[in-house]
Structures are given as structure tokens and as C-alpha cells.
Image (cartoon, rainbow, N blue to C red; front, side, top):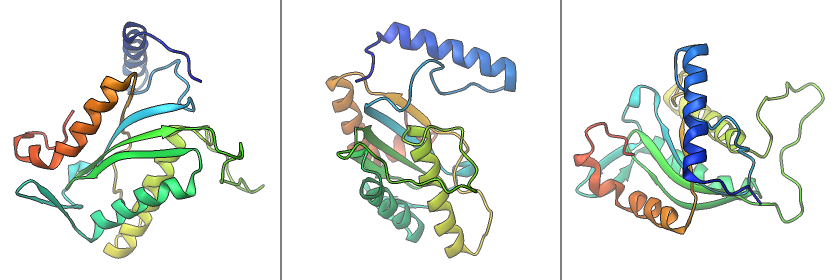
Length: 196
């Protein structure tokens, strides 16, 4: 089970991480520097399309209508929990230019994971059962499928980074579930068209 840390400790770590990356690369890191993102527990995620292009459909009234590409993202998100035993899927919504979701990392029933590294494969710096590994795989596969449909090989679909928040308690979990459920109805009020 992951170490319980106070909001103040997590916020201090996050600020230190942002300052370090700002000095090193000119942009803030969104990850906490000392947090183990293979830790069991729930996370809130937002993934945006490159340049926030509206590719996944449109909001009509207060309902999201998925495009062909949005349906791919939706279906692959559902399939993710089938492919990764350690992933617990919760609330999610595909919006015109982003995806909001709650996922949890759990111990697989058999203690294993379903990815295999072949001897000639390059090893990723990401832990194989971590949040970053899952997101990278999801983005890569949906990009491949959508680019094949669009006839745009090698084109970026997603922004390089993503937003994540460690869900710290039941109150936050309820808040994010409600936010996700209401996201289509709030679309017209969202001036940045992304949310939190």
C-alpha cells in the first residue's frame, strides 16, 4: 500500500519538481519527484489532443457525440482494463479534444502483468506497471489506430504530457466522479475547453 502523505507534503514535493524542471528544461514537470507512480490507488487523469484539436466529436446540448476517432479512444479505454490486470477503470469521458478519467492501480490477481519484453526490445525508463507506462501505451496505440484511419502516419495525436492527480480520499474521488459526469454539460462554460 502506498505511503499516506499530507496535502502539504505532496504540494511541497510538486513545487520542488516544477522548479527543478523549469531550471533544467524551461517547463514545469507535472509529476511529484519522490512519488512512486506504480503505487496502488486511484488517480485522476486528463489527456489532451495535440494543439487541443477537436477530433473526438462534439457536444450537442449537454451530451457528447463521439466521432469515429472519439469512438476509437472510448473503445480502447474500455479495453485497457481487459489488457492490464493491474488497472481498475472507473469514471471516464471522452470530450472533443481530451479525455478525463479515473484509474486505479491494483495488484494483479496472479501477481504478474501481461507485458513481455523481448530480448531485442529497447527498455523503457518507465516502470512496466506504472501510470506513465499505461498512458504511454494507450496514447501510442490510439495514435496508431487513428492515424491509420486518417491516413496521417507519424502525426502526433496527443500532447506529450498529461495531467494527473493522486486521489487522496473518498471526498476527492466523489468530486472527480461528479466532475467527469458533468463535463459534457459544462462544455460551453469551459473557456479553455479542458477543465480542471
